Image 1 (cartoon, rainbow over the protein chains, first blue to last red):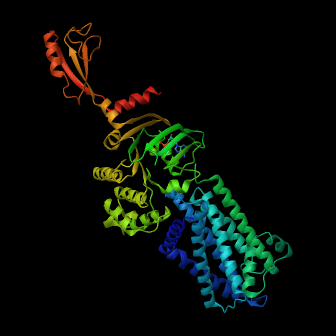
Image 2: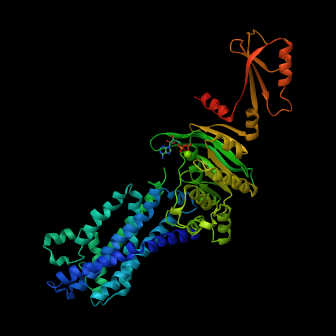
Image 3: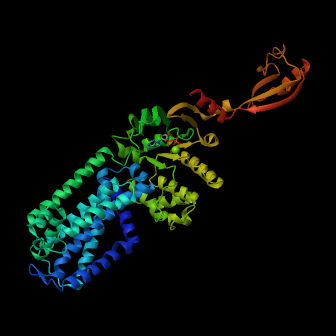
Length: 253
Length: 309
Ligand SMILES: Nc1ncnc2c1ncn2[C@@H]1O[C@H](COP(=O)(O)OP(=O)(O)O)[C@@H](O)[C@H]1O
Ligand SMILES: [Mg+2]
């Protein structure tokens, strides 16, 4: 194990985070606050409670998930795509590091960043609505597993992408809609039956549901299914990454 | 310790598009030497280096670096190697200090500020250590790349076209540094398409063209060939044969007997020119003009390359 390399890459990536503190931390906090103002206050004044939880509190897990997913993907995909784009990847490829070490350090840094971000959003949310987390252990577990899984997914996108447009297309066209439609801002019980069924095809629903369960003890689906879903996503991402590295896909000619 | 620090056997590379960039290369690099890989653009120099360094996958063949297979034992192999790439690719927003220390860590070495300081000082980068790379000139960026490559104390250093587009001062500094590195036991392999660079720096020269190594020679031997000079005498009246009494000289008739060509070694004690001219006068041969030409490494190179076409 090349511990020094993992450390070097991890710290390098984290340094990038601190350098771009504004984009990294401040802007998600601002946008989350805006969501609270718009959804929590405006819509929340009409929908008072869902499942016995005030609407303002109800959307907190969904909002955190929304940021966690988009930020994990953005951080990890950019982290590996940028060296490919400018050519500094040569150093990584010529270094005595294994693929596992590369993934651990890049994905570790991206996940760290989005976990910090998730906690900051949680703290911001606590300023707006009183929050009581019923299962803090599971809340953290979901937070970490989701951050790691989607950082892995971002890493895959960063290797697959061959332009900045492609880098953004999946988060924009797939992840954001799935998150919005995955029950971040409503319970699927509120939907007509057909749409409930369709919603069940959305993997993000299971993540949001499980995460919400850890807060309020109740989700759209049972927590076991949510846990199984997150591990399934994790497994799929790991399998794809294993394949990428086995074939050297897009990294080496 | 074996004599070869890098050993390349039957190495071929066919790129995804089907283009064969390297054709069964065999090459041994000796421990501690400065080896110049000389070849025109597109010859395959960067491809060859990239394979040895692990950036490009070989199609067939085997490479050992300090006895370690670069594929199956890549960790040991790569930790011995430093690479200064052809392109100026650096992290724009990092400081010189941070990026150099990063490279050291990446190559599996514990932090050693004293060594990094020494490297930066030797490259006149110490004053710039806290500057962001983006603020540096092209020449300075090249120095940063060299510092990064030396940060982990490699035994083998690859310099891919180190002086292309580099100012005179940096070129001189770089050559001095390369000599220093060799003195400390580091093997240096540099690629270039500048013959003077190979001439100036190398212990041995390998010529590569169209993916094939067509010559590997001690530089001294190449220089010996290079030391040959020709004196051409344009005669007032044509000759049919080299005149009797002048057979002792390496003379040839040219231009339908209108010219006499004398080949000599500039580095010999005497060139024989005085004697030749005296002999010509004795034989009553008059000439209206004379010129000397030297076959340069460039010409040797061109003739080698064109022989292969
Ligand atoms: N990634 C690649 N895909 C296809 N062909 C390539 C690639 N990289 C280099 N080549 C081709 O291989 C040949 C050798 O390139 P290179 O090794 O860069 O030569 P040199 O460094 O001697 O100028 C060139 O014809 C180049 O166009
Ligand atoms: Mg090249």
